[in-house]
Amino acid sequence: MRSALPYIEKDEKELVLLIADGDEIAFKQLYRRLLPYLAGTGIKLLRSEEVVAEVIQETLIRLWLHREKLRNVQYPRAWIFKIFSNECFRYLKQNGLQHIPLETLTDTDLNSIINNSEHAFSMRETQGIIHDAVRSLSPRQRDIYRLSREQGLKIPEIAAQLGLTSKYVKKTLIVALRAVRRKLVEAGKSLSH
Image (cartoon, rainbow, N blue to C red; front, side, top):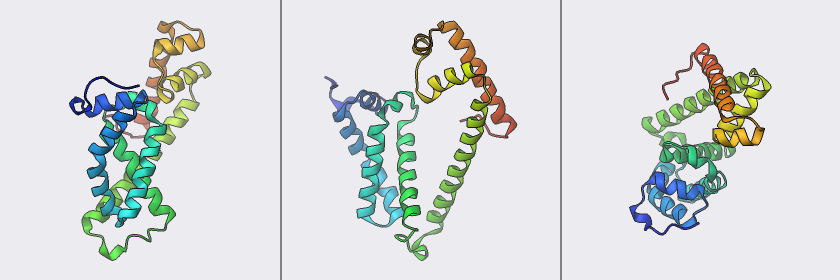
């Protein structure tokens, strides 16, 4: 799908909505816009232009493969940077940090690596709590929650797929979300994000 308007006039949210619909021109525009930021961050962590190019390519592949999720992303740049940083750390883990001589890392670089590692651990921990909370829902609540939150379906789409009324789906989703939030609060996880 192509847009008739010039891409220069579009902001990142407009671009990602076009990308979610499979618009390759919007994808190239967003790539050109974010490349300096990705490359700058990547070179600090990976210390190799060749490796950075490889990691950026892997990031773009993942972004394109999961582009339908972009419709529900509030902060596209942060979401893409998350994919990119995950790819950087995946590369470093697979290669035993061999491309970064530790003595060349500054305190800022080390703090960034530590903060990103702590953030990744916290995210995994939170995802585990959510997973357990969803498992404890009733089968109907679990189905509706997953269709909404994991597949990104809207209430009318869920209702049609499950043969239920939209009103029932909405009420059931609210109950499921409250149960998940309650588990997060009990585990001491902040809901401010």
